[in-house]
Image (cartoon, rainbow over all chains, first blue to last red; front, side, top):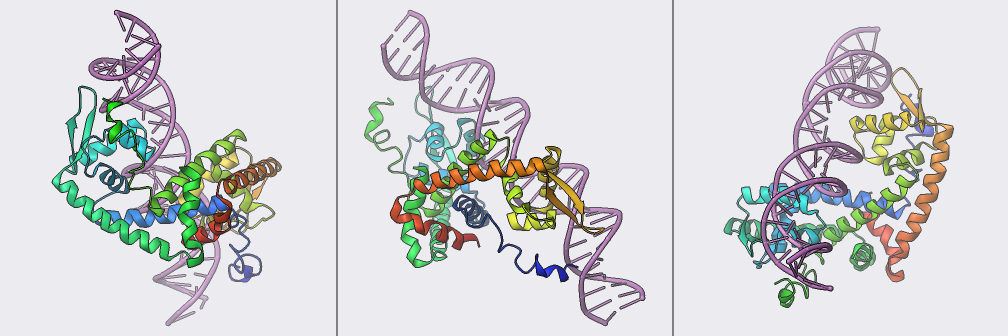
Length: 150
Length: 150
DNA sequence: CGAAAATGCTATGCGTGATAACAAATCCAG
DNA sequence: CTGGATTTGTTATCACGCATAGCATTTTCG
């Protein structure tokens, strides 16, 4: 049955996939594959993608509040709490009051180490990512994506 | 404080965003924006993005099993259960036994109507999406994305 | 001054994805 | 043909990201 049905199923199972021509669909699938890969690499360093994003944002600054980070990363204030609480519990960041209302998120020495690991992972990753795109399309990739969200 | 700090924060808050030059980051942000928009439009028709994907896949076929759909959409078998159960409860699809082990997912008349709505939404959406990409980058978009997951 | 906005937070629910385990059916190598 | 391996559909959880509502405090600004 399974092999006999090659005629109209197995022979061209996904070739007839009506989703394959949709840019939106391709965008989602590509993003999912990419995130899975990046997450796996980050996990090797004991980090999550969100951690790395925060580390990159707070580097060399002592004025990045939870709200500012959230705005930059498009993460709700309420959801920054968990993220930062975890990072603080891991010793990656500390908090330093700015005034009686705002609190700055600052890098710890351990966080600085993690940042360097994250930076190395990201650099390798981005290179590998771009390498998979045919050369003639490569330079158009980032501008096209940025047009969709920036 | 907030206004006075324009010097090194508010004047160029996200301009100094170290994430903005990373294709992987742009890919995620673009996909998120895209999915939010598409989800909203689908919701207007009482559909979810996953519903629409399934509808497109089962159209005109009586041999698409849960497993096949899952493979095409990269959704785990276990997670197809929820998705299809909901679609069945909405009257969008029915099940028809193929043999004693496999069950085909087939479109109902209501599902066919929903499919046409979904198709219209998707067409508009994809057009709007591509329109936001500068013309010179447009033709490179789909090939670049497909290289990342197909 | 006083209303409005911003900040940080708790609690909670929703949607999606991942995993483990299971029974039944099917496949396939010996 | 027989029996182990694989496939299919399913249940039951868990993890994670994201959204909303609400609250207290502080800051901003007309």
